[in-house]
Length: 359
Image (cartoon, rainbow, N blue to C red):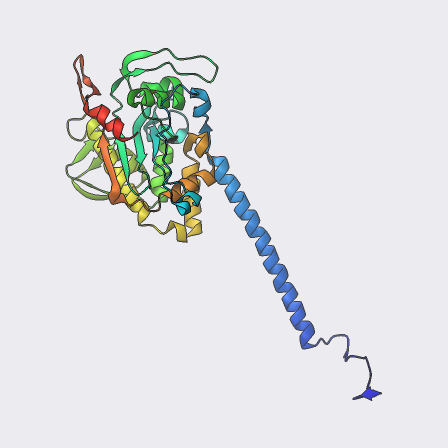
């Protein structure tokens, strides 16, 4: 039996150039699906490449294997009894990180920024960052580069060792034995285990400041330092990366011209950078976040327990509750060396009491 002139089971076909609404919807949905699938594949590929690229940026040193057991022990942690805290993937225990700013002599950018020739590098800035249990408070301890210390024998990559030396400047440790010797010298000086090592060179620091949009500092006195090429009148200034680096390196243009004056500027700069970072919207802007992450990871040297994007992200996540006002900056207590007024030595027992507070 036919219905409206069509045999049962037949469908209206029209001519070869006509298509019904259902067919058109099907075509549109297929096109949209293919577009979405393509975008998803490209997005996953881009994210995978970005992750690989940021991971590949990081240089690492296996400090734990190099030093073995010849170092202070890690502090024992007491369980809190809080099951939810124990199950949390974000670490929250106390942590000590040795942070060095190196005046690397390698690379054209570092040389242009004051790194000198290619004859080596020194730890121009040394800070122990102590994160309190819970990661809501921190203490940043600066070690003057002119401090006279006992530099222990340090293992070298070729299997040899450096010789122990007494009454040598602290920053020579990095020069003769790199990160491994810098860590061992700090641990010998403080008897505090360094859980991690982070190093940033001249060019990397300047690029990081620029990536963050600069940094604002306030000076209480005029700065005019021919060595760091920085001239600033007293007042508030927004510095770009090169100016911020000069600010961190200035010593002859402030105070008595000693390393202690430079440390005060460095500590001020650290707090200003923390304030700058806390006031940005990096986490809500993936493009900006990637740009800063690319800049940072490309300039970092870390220990092997902190040399992946996942590990760095985990550390960052654990610091979400750390506000700049809860960061305390101090300098290792020192006094002029009796035999060399241009150098300093640890002022005891105050220095020992400071190290005890970090254990």
